[in-house]
Amino acid sequence: MKKTKQIALFFLSLCSSIGFAQEATNASGGNASGIGGSASYSVGQASYTTNSNANGNISQGVQQAFEIFSVGIAENNFKTSLSAFPNPTSDYLILNVDETQLSNLSFQLIDVQGKVLITELILQGQTKINTLELPAASYFLNIIQNNKQVKSFKIIKK
Image (cartoon, rainbow, N blue to C red; front, top):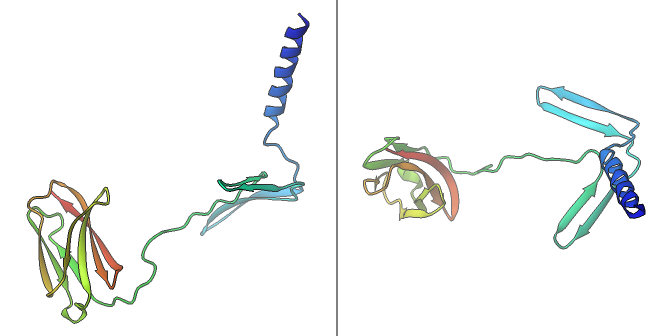
């Protein structure tokens, strides 16, 4: 009977501590919003620790930072007009490139799993890409110059 009371007392104390696991006393805090977005903040957190090891970091505290950023081609000096048509396509795709920028220029046709299906050099202003054998799906046409991606098109094969 005594052992049952000890087990019940242990679980009761465990449950009461879990209920207050994310509670903290701060001097101030609130929410702020504007045209650029919104943020919540707290001021005066009494304690804050970070534990690190080879597998990563864990930070204890009430407010944790979370950063969202875009990944893409931020900047390039490629000043040529490119176009790919017809899109959607059924049997072929035409890639138009200004002929003054043909040096070290190539294209890759990639499926949505990332598999490179076609890679070729662009040698003239208008390149015909055969899509007749490809199944109906979405693809990416990446234009590459000097081993850097300068443009990407989403192509739909119907």
